[in-house]
Amino acid sequence: MLTFLPLDRIQSLEADMQQSDYQPNTAQRLLAEEVIGFVHGDEGVSAALTATQVTHPPSLCIRTCVS
Image (cartoon, rainbow, N blue to C red; front, side):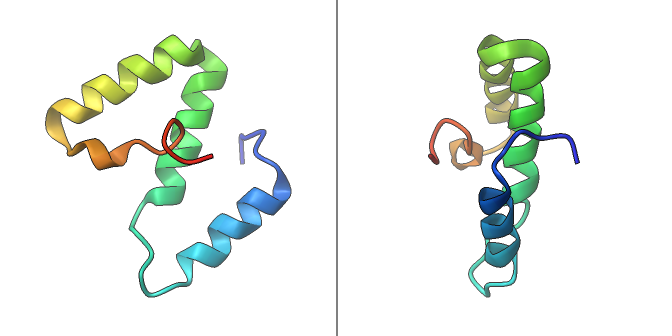
C-alpha cells in the first residue's frame, strides 16, 4: 500500500470498514487523496476534488474534512 498514513490510522480505517454504518469507499477516497497529494501536492488534491465534485456530492471530501 502506498501511503504515509500512520499505522494506527490505517488500523482505525480497517476497523471502521467492519461497522454497519461504514460509508462505502471512505478508506479508498482517503488513500487516493493521500497519493494524489504525495504526487501532485495540495494543488493536485484540490484540483482532483473539484473535478470529483462536478459529478459527485461534496461529501466526498475526506482529507480536508477529516483530521
